[in-house]
Image 1: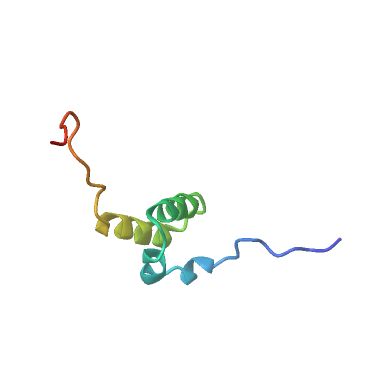
Image 2 (image 1 turned 90 degrees about the horizontal axis):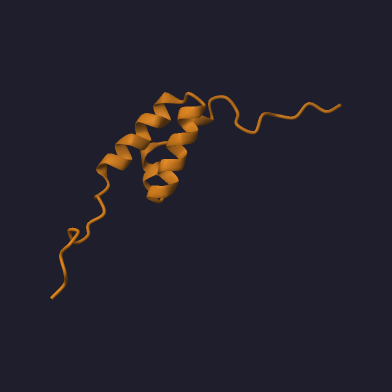
Length: 68
């Protein structure tokens, strides 16, 4: 029986920098945050939260307002 390496190797979290996370789409950052939280990678969770906070909120017209 062959012993396989763990797909998520220990210390892979060090590969995630703020600059690398900023290149991801918002949806990808949100998923990375969920995965990091599940794996208890608190540093990656914090970086994801920083990136998400720095991104602009989706702007739209207020509900009930019609375009003229």
